[in-house]
Image (tube, rainbow, N blue to C red):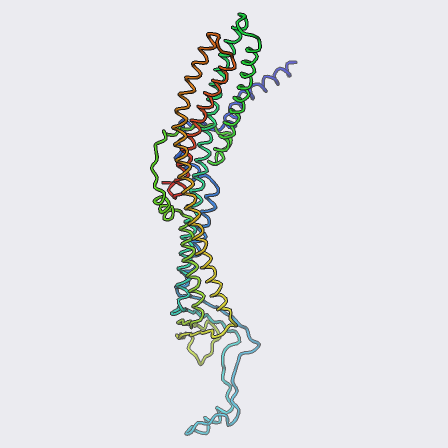
Length: 457
């Protein structure tokens, strides 16, 4: 019995010691301040894996440009070889093979039977070659400039990804605020219907109203409570989606700053379209792609021209060299190469490059039209949302007065619960429309910023 008690005490002690650590590890960190929209965008740009992938593309393009630049530089290569021969090379002079006028006969006879060594049985040579391209038909220059344009295009593509992510965060941020406001309005509706149901019960118990009026109020209250449950779930889902956009754990608690009051916007459509054509990174990427395609055409055409290089060679006989030559020697010269005919391959490459260039031009024009349409749509949606705000403000004033009059009429027993409930529903709908228009206006304003390419500014 004593052993069982000690075991239980030990388990409890370990539980007390370990549970706080487990709890703190499982609970996501709580932010100490409300998160602003700009902070949210900065966090997403820092953590989202999509941005990391786009940055890798930029790094890859930088490597490609470095490779293209390397073609301007001289190429230094070295070869160290070793050869073992079955026998050392020699030259045997047969009789009468050497005739030198004025040479004494004794020496001439000695030369006729001489054996001359041409090297050793083991031969090892070190050869270093330096080659510098002088003229490549502008092919190297064109390839370098093409790789530089491709690097610029990859940077524009990175900005496109960043702007798309920023707008995704904006939508998620506004979705959280919208869901929270819907839950708040739903809670207000529940409180109003609770008061109405309480008053209806008091009237019913006093014999003032029939039971049908009481049931109507209680049914509407039950419906409102169900809506409140749904709105709370929508808040949790919106927060999880927002955390996902930020790269946070889905259960991370958060508090968001409310957006500033919507200010009336004056937008000149043609100016906005012109700004989009200048600022949109997608269009900048296509412009760089067109230039890269043009450089590709030049690089392909350069193959029609001759290629000229300077070549220098330094050779050292480490072992077994020809005794007739110096063990160290150098050579310098030039190489002129011209591929006059290759079965039409170069012409086909030039044709392919020109087709790619034209395709990029057509894509740019198509994209410019799409951007202009996107800007026009964003401007119209923004103007529509601002107009809806003004209409919704008037509707709230009217709905509040209608609800007040309905309550007074019900208190004086010249109206039924249905009239009060309907008035309260109209007031809730008017408030919902108002805040929906506000958040629509904010979203439309950021959509216009994205359409004009300035959402990150």
